[in-house]
Length: 119
Image 1 (cartoon, rainbow, N blue to C red):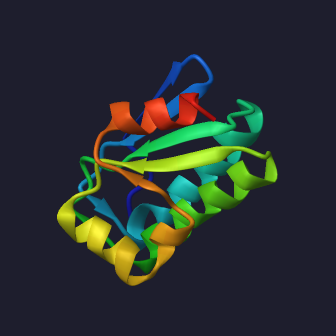
Image 2 (image 1 turned 90 degrees about the vertical axis):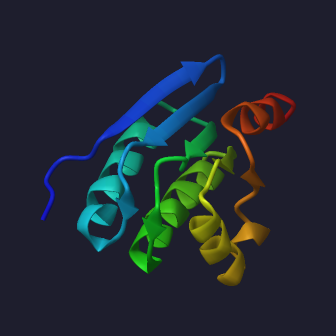
C-alpha cells in the first residue's frame, strides 16, 4: 500500500490544475486521492478544477470513485470540473461508464482551462 500521493497543484487565476503524477489510479491510491480532494477543495475554496490525467495509464472503478468525489465537492460549491488529457484507456473507461455526461473531457489542460475561464 502506497502512503504518499505524487501530485502537483497550480493556480491560474480562478482555475486550479491538479496533476496526478502516478501511472495507476486504482484502489492503492484512490483513498489517498479522495482525502486530498476533500482537504484541497474545501480548504482552498476551489470552484474551477482541471484534473490533469496525462500521466495515468490505468484507472479502475476506485479511481473513478475518487474523481466523482471531486466532482461532487466542486458541484456542492457551485463549481465546475474538467478532465484533461486522459489516455485512450482512461477516456474509454469514462465513456463506457457514461461518466462523460457529467465529467466533460478536454484533450489538453490548456483547452480545459480556457473552457473554465469562460464560465
